[in-house]
Image (cartoon, rainbow, N blue to C red):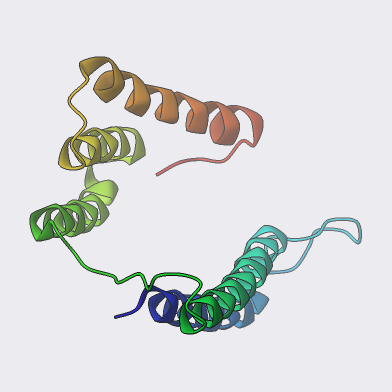
Length: 152
C-alpha cells in the first residue's frame, strides 16, 4: 500500500472516531457553577486537535501524492520488516490492559514502559530504569499532586 494512501486512511479513521467520542462526551455531566467548563472540556479540546491535525495530514498526503504523480518524488511503500516486534508490542498492550486493574497504575505502567523499551530494542540499562521511573514520577506529580486526580 502506498504511504500517502495509508496516511489518508488513518487520518479519516481518526476523524470519524473523534467525532463519535465528541458526541459521546455530551453525557459527561454538568458543571457545578456557571464559570466551570465541565468535565467534557478537555476531551473535546483534545478531540478537536486530533481532527485538525488529521485534516492537515490529509492535505499533506494529497500534496505528496501529487508530487509522486508529477515525478518529483519517489513513492513510499508501507511494509513491515519485523513482524515479531509488532506482535510483541500488541501482546504487551493487551497484557497491560488486563493487568492494569489488578496491579494498579504505577506497577503496570512502569513495567509496560520497561518491556516496551526492550521490545523496541533498547538495551541501555540507565534508560531502561530511568525512563519508566521518570515517566511515572512526572505523571504522579502532574496528576496526583497538582491536579488531585486519583490514579487506578
